[in-house]
Length: 93
Image (cartoon, rainbow, N blue to C red; front, side):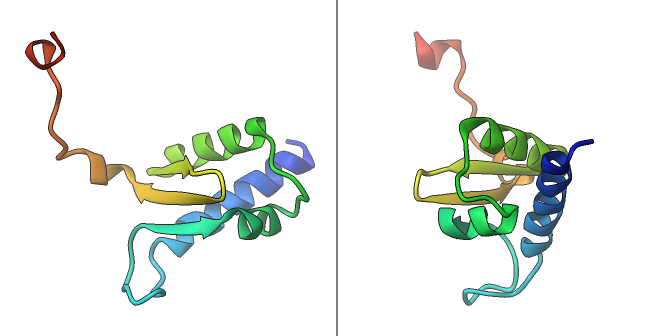
């Protein structure tokens, strides 16, 4: 694994840890993180599309969904989505 892979893995681990930390008035759970802080966490001056995709994949492997909102990122548990309504063929038609 190259150095970038290590930093992405370490960042994914840290982001997953943040999910269980108490901050922002909540005991734990979903949160958002500024793009500037994400760059700092990854030790990079710029985040490229490939970086975000790899990080999102690493987060999904850990049970989280990373959503890029341009100026910030949102991190949610994949369990959040299990009770959502499902669109079916009748709905789409």
